[in-house]
Length: 351
Ligand code: NAD
Ligand code: DAU
Image (cartoon, rainbow, N blue to C red; front, side, top):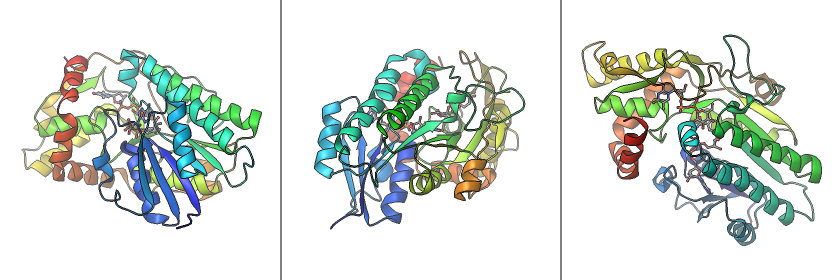
């Protein structure tokens, strides 16, 4: 079959990447979707078991740190577009060991840009390199205000510094070589298939196992939460309709303090598990704060909603309920990702 587009999605076996790949494979049968992923601890092909046999889906186990590996994939699949998500994504791990974040997030991104530039050199017409980034590049807000696309970059963790650096390289390739790039900067995602090192799945996992719920500092830090499938729909809209050389903030105006969110999850789990009201809150345990912990993130997504017509589809309370139900229905997924290396990780970070 002659495909209309042959899109390389990197990091497609991870949390957001797998939701995006599923969406693209199902919504666009005329596109070939090539999922390039190294399968680190965060990548899991089980996340895509429902599309793995689709005729417009391919998987390539490749490290973005390998220029040669990326070249081969471009060549074999005649790649026409890139949506780049592969990254080391956890802030706490970046504090523990920043170098892997530089190698994957910075060098890996430049490798992809470089291969795209050389393969598309004849003509950049009808080509898109969409870089998926984070709101953390903007730094930390006080009690008021929002991140807009014009907010100056001020990354404060090794993770956000590596993402900011990759964004700068993407823009540099636009200005210097005219590479047709787009960038999206999204707030905190939640939903199914989320690795239980991040706040929401970690709390759900510990609640199910009646383990302490580690809240950093006093729990007053604020995050702006978006359902992962709404992020995937935003990437779809920006990839197809966004302007070249521009960036778009993605978020759903949904700010919660960590402590309010953990309380909400405790009460939801009490109801789901038929436990006495308020009993799970007793598991909350305040622990040492994250080093350099950003206080507040909040996204102004008006450019995306007003110019491109995107809007989130789900209220947070409903999304959380669906998420918790997914974890209750998929103990085998949780068992698989938390066996082995996860135990050592947990001991190290939450001893
Ligand atoms: P994740 O950690 O769940 O998945 C990352 C994926 O990248 C995994 O499949 C992993 O195997 C793969 N990967 C890691 N290193 C690789 C390498 N060297 N080569 C090839 N593949 C590699 O991450 P996520 O939460 O799904 O985030 C995806 C992207 O979205 C990241 O770029 C992240 O910065 C960005 N983002 C995440 C959020 C969020 O809330 N999770 C919000 C905004 C932006
Ligand atoms: O804002 C987008 C970013 O959101 C993404 O770019 C990152 O990839 C993603 O990991 C996420 O970063 P955060 O650091 O905000 O997410 P995390 O789930 O690690 O933490 C959310 C908040 O909860 C943060 O204030 C720290 C706190 N926390 C986290 C954990 C894991 C706790 O209090 N206890 C915990 O055990």
